[in-house]
Length: 515
RNA sequence: GGCAGGGUAGCUCAGCUGGUUAGAGCACGGCACUCAUAAUGCCGGGGUCGCGGGUUCGAGUCCCGCCCCUGCUACCA
Image 1 (tube, rainbow, N blue to C red):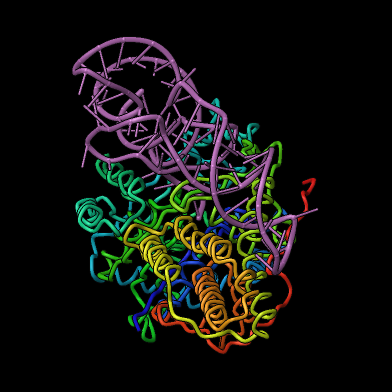
Image 2 (cartoon, helix red, strand yellow):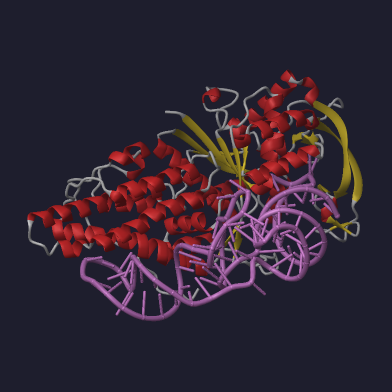
């Protein structure tokens, strides 16, 4: 049993969870569940990024302490992940004591292994007193901060710790070029290579004015102790989650996969690996930069306030339908769109009409023609055809080509379509009218094949729609839980003797909604 | 501005190194069937392959120009 440690980006504690957060967690959850069905010893980490200026300011605006604010948000996020069926094994928060200690240990380890990688330098830039932070050109319009146009920006210098990122350009380029799986999809990899070609600048490792954070473990030569800046505060969560520097952190580290948004692949494939290299620690095996979900095709401007309410989406057809829709409709390697219309269409055509109805008709026939007990039957064409789709399903999921969840789902659904074709072609209701031994045997064969197909579908779709997959598994009378199954066992799956139980429809068909 | 990717049926997309009448799913229309969640199966209508040139016996597929969209171009995360 090989270990599989996968993570998602930690979410910034500055507002409620939105569609983008959910998409990433759902995608990573499907991968985690997929790995478990392969038999891997999975550890799935998610969490919250709780330090920084914005948290401090938001808390102040609400009249609460930063800690109270992040405590509340952590609860809100956690509740949403539970609701969406995210099977995380660990929820890390950067305000955890263990994380704080781990960050400091990591920094000290860099000082120890590569003393020259940290150095003092003046950081200078336009500083907005209103924001209490430095502003980049993009945030400055006509010489004023866009958020505080009445204030005057000040050119400020402060002495900080800097990390010598520039030193790792060759190392990083080599890694990206020679280990293609290190960053996928390829478009992201090319962007990072381009970025490196343009030259890497050193990055700040500490800030003076920042208060809500982790104390940088070394004082400046002036004696001042500063606060650890974002990269060194947030990114190490993946490492500190293992218990680093204590316990047997090395048993879990390095991470096998970081699932992150395409907007932060840079941090995960440039800065983070350089930090680890500087500390003489193993690098993560893979980083996957997924795309974004747009909403309704609209330009989601801040003014229009267009935003998807996650609870509303889950309320509509349940968490699994929402999971299915996002992962089927939005390519995991590119952007896609959420719209209520498409959600309704997908729900009815794929889940209700195809899959739910296939289960319903098969179970009904086993009850009607065989008293609910699945007869014995040898494998046939349908099993062989399914095997092709299953191979393609794995090829899309196992990382060799990246994590193409939408493709894997397409393959699983191809098996469902085949099941419906099979019923129509075999016409079990016609066979049932025959009153001879051959007819009896033929019907046994067809029903056994159909139940076998459905059971396989339950396993294949379990990573994506875990609750519904289990519901089907139960209705088929299959033993144990679907999540205890292994892909290895699919080929020899034998439903003979299972007692089916027709329960609630898996996905009740929805009438055309007005939404 | 630079670099990268993309513009193919109403919608979401396949179309490898150029080659018979451009494909799939959904949506739409007709037919069939009745085990089933009025579900399923079969057949069908529907496309100036962003625009304009060029190379070639032949281009959605190569070259040039143009238009449009998206991403990256680093200290909010």
